[in-house]
Image (tube, rainbow, N blue to C red; front, side, top):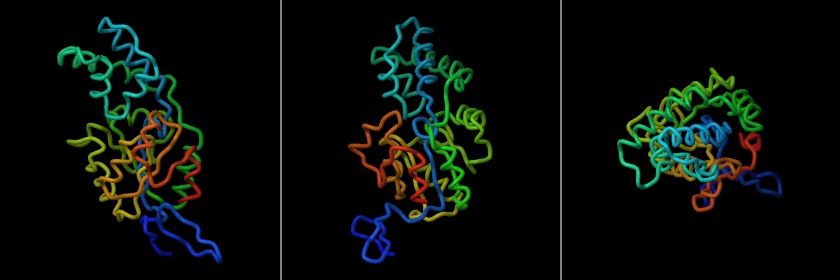
Length: 236
């Protein structure tokens, strides 16, 4: 096996050369919203509940979905609009956190193929972690509530570190804790934030087209682009 000019690896298979996007990984790190879980409806409901709490009208679903990915403070600041002052944003954020914590599993589900992929990775002794910009407490509630308790060796959220994705600190911490090399680590996500995080950490990336911000993968392309999570199994 050897690396080609793009950094990918090639396997000699007779007269054919099958290009692999990355070597077999020893650590897979997953984003949460739009990657492992379809949480759009619950996020939208909690954002609009927060706006109603502040005496504001609801926003369109697609607009709110486009705000997801950089953590709850950024989500609510965007949802409140440019005219909102810091006091109003903080009040809305406090309400959002409380409302979403109570309703984060109303309609949130795993995407198709997620469980099969996680089981296949565990069968190959691949370590699994979660790195999301969602608050870590709510992230753990969702992971446990969807039957994934014990699947991941770590779940880190947007308030687990002093910085959030795309800063590489969280991903570098997971890689260090898993004792894996850069070339053995893959970040899986649905947005440019996840792909840029992988780039900043010097690891491989997988992008998913079914998530909340697949359009952002056009300008920030991953090493591997998939339409379904279980398509990843063939690359493990």
